[in-house]
Length: 129
Image 1: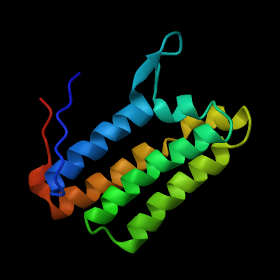
Image 2: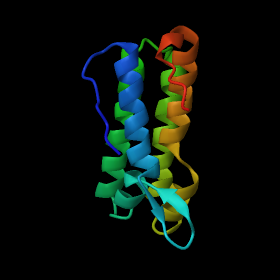
Image 3: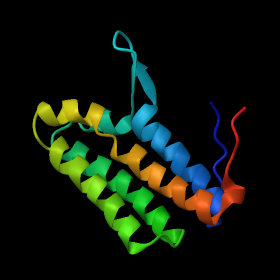
């Protein structure tokens, strides 16, 4: 898969960047045997403390992009809470790593961003064929 990520701050560019980042963080590869997609967030989360901090930083990048879109403080707070919960739960040894497979904060945050974009910038919607 090839991604041509634009560098602008227009809604189309932001949508493409956040969708690509969510894909990398949550669904980069499929685990053989369980046939479940995992991403960088779950993989780096296996490294104690540092991995969870890296995952949180990448998740907060989505929040920053949402701020650039002018999303409400309530939406930004929800997104930050998703990242915070994921980080806190991920910090718990073993159980946190299992929950990283189940609670996908970046996917939840992408859903919030898409809802905003679809309402306020409908021209950014890409119809998959």
